[in-house]
Amino acid sequence: MATHNPSKNHHWIPQCYLKGFAKSRSKKASLYVVDAIAKKAFDSIPRYVGSAKDFNRIEVPGFAPDHIESQMSKFETQLDQALGRVIQAKSLDNLEDFNLILNLIALMAVRTPRKRETIRQSQEQILKRVMEMSLSNRAQYESTIENAKKSGEIASDSNVSYESIREFIERDKYKIEIPTARHIVIEFDLQDTILPLLGKRKWILLKAPAKSGFITTDHPVVLRWKEQKARGFFASPGHATMGTELFFPISQELAMVGTFEGPQKTIDINEDYVAYFNGVLIHSSQRQVYARDGRFKYVAPDGVIRFGADLLKDVERFRPNDKI
Image 1: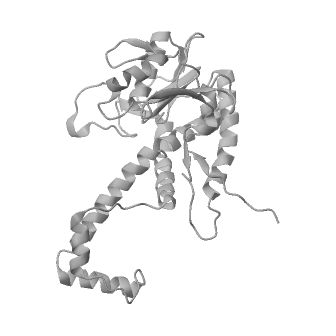
Image 2: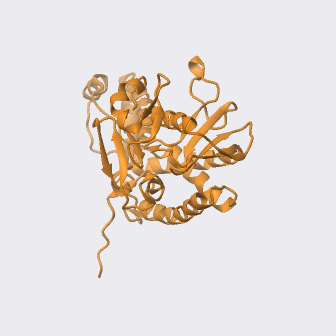
Image 3: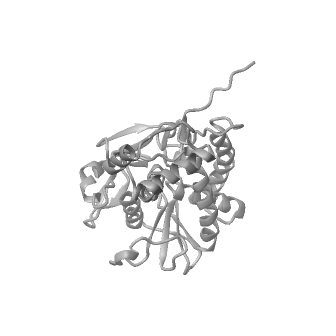
């Protein structure tokens, strides 16, 4: 009987998407990578970037550990074909292909290591507060433990003292992890929420000039305010918020900008706007930038247009949020 060997290298950025920014549209084509954390630029291929070991691995009875990864590969097969047609036609007129790209945007908006860590930290804060409340007094603690024993959540012979657990909690030297399966449930729920909102936006398809090209990053969905100004507590826009724009590169030739105010059209843009678009993406990236080569242009925070080969020297300019 053949043995099933679960895949280990799981992509949060699909290879079929990344190859649109390589030297040719192939998973084995060279891809130029700038890594802000490692502080180096190097050539790679789509297989080795935008991924992490066991990123989608689940431990759920009745399902293989790589079940989610296997199911995602079916979506990516359809997506690959859709991206190919859109890139060739330079058009979003095919509604089925357009819908698949919107699904990709929704997925990548919520399924990244950064997003998972944000959710983990949020859940951790809530759970730590619950534990602090459970330890507010001895009677509350003993009642909680007794209920946990009755429900089978802890062993009936467990005997952890109130004093020891209180000391452990007060030291706050622990970290709460969220099971990957729970992250995936949250991500799919968020995707279902975001997708119809993406469908309500009016999308402009941007066509880069022949001698220029778009880049992508490890965080390629950029949602921001159309008017950049100080907003205090309301600094972060939401997917349902008016007055926002969403940037997304499709390939080195094409990109999308979506707003609720319209219009919806296809336009040819110049090299300066490509550089501006690339600068927006770089500023929102977490660690890595992907491009055909180091000759791409971007607008730095000081407003100067530079080449990709200069990006490592420019990293500190993009550091206000500890991002590249």
